[in-house]
Image (tube, rainbow, N blue to C red; front, side, top):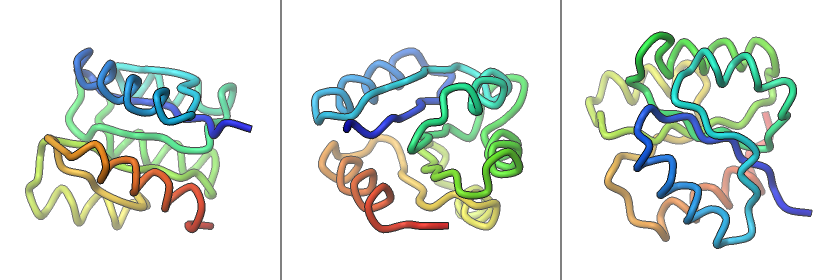
Length: 124
């Protein structure tokens, strides 16, 4: 059975890139959202195995969305994928419950390895 992934990023280009990479490696993208608010409202319905989350988005940012998703599902697996590589952002995301922080631009192989590792190894 394919692992189900939700993509949350305000950049259409970033969402399309992630979608292409993930679906070409036998993952199912169950939802793509440009805001944290939309992702939170659909999380329970979609029940993804993994969420990729940008940090800086209009409305609800990625850290707020991460916290709300983890309040809905404490076992949610969330990877932050962001161009903001500020040490403070990285620490905040990991302290909030993100399992990994990938800095854009990223190598496709690195992204896929992190996704595979998080899906197969990390259990909350």
